Length: 182
Image (cartoon, rainbow, N blue to C red; front, side, top):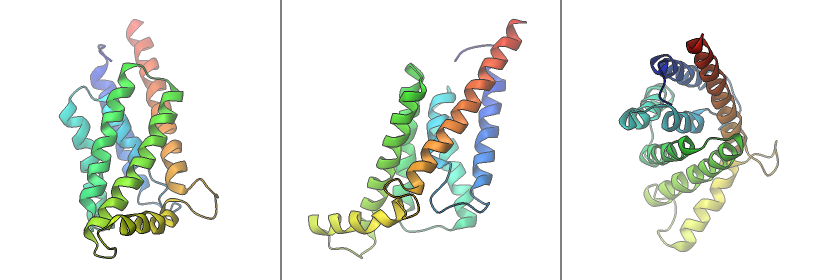
């Protein structure tokens, strides 16, 4: 990651993130968003760990101000904070197959944490094991849709945006390295 073009690649990362934030405001399938990819890319691309965490949280907050705040926002933000750690792990040895694993795992982690937050704080479910299972079961339609069968918009969106953002990032990093050699 350390090269003379790091400020350029960091600016590029911020640009990708800004574009991804804007994509939340255009019409899209439910739960097909770039936020998991933003958290992964932030953990992967920023050397400053505080910035790695702040970027997805600020991105979420800025878009949530316009899209709506809610009582379980803490679970959403906790999920994305934990996903940043997966980005740190990708730094050690990146591959697109590892990105697929981390993106898929991130999608599942988000589902588990946010639904746990709903169970814990909504008052809609009894605070026992049966209530938790009921919450996870009733949360499935929000994760998967009948339009794509067993793979839901959230899962497909997480993978799509992760590959799009990381592929673009890898391409730009390669071009910047080539330009610095010349």
